[in-house]
Image (cartoon, rainbow, N blue to C red; front, side):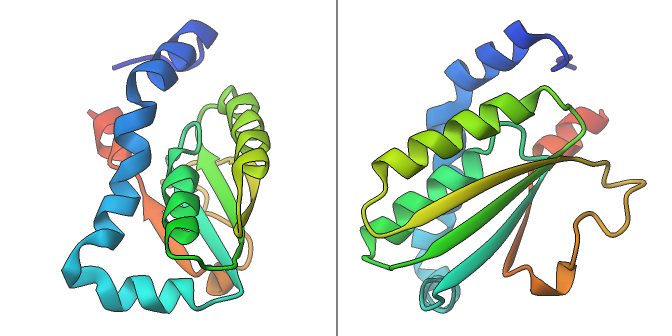
Length: 143
C-alpha cells in the first residue's frame, strides 16, 4: 500500500492518475443506462457532492466537466473526506483550477479529515447530500 503521508507520494499519485481517475465519474454519467440520473443531477441549481476516500478531489473534475459539457448552470459544493490530511493542499489547488476554468458551473472545494469506519456520519447534514461517491481506493487502501 502507498503511504500518502509523504508529499512525494501524493504528487506522484496526482501526476500518474489525474487523467484516468477524473474521468471515472463523467464516464459513468455518460453511460446510456445512467441518463435518468444524469438528467436529475444536472437539473439542480446547486449540487452537493461528498467524495469519501476522494484524495486530491478527482471526482470534482469529472462532475464539473460533465456539467459544463451539458450546459448546466450549477453551483457545486464538492467535499472531499479522506484519512490523509496532506490532501488538503491538493484539494485547495484543484478548487482554484476549477474556478479559473469554469464556464457555467462553479465548484467550491472543501476538505475534511475523516474515517469511514469510525466517523459516522461521515459528513455534516448527510440528508442534504445529492451525491455520495465512495472511491474504490477505499478497498485498495484496506488491503
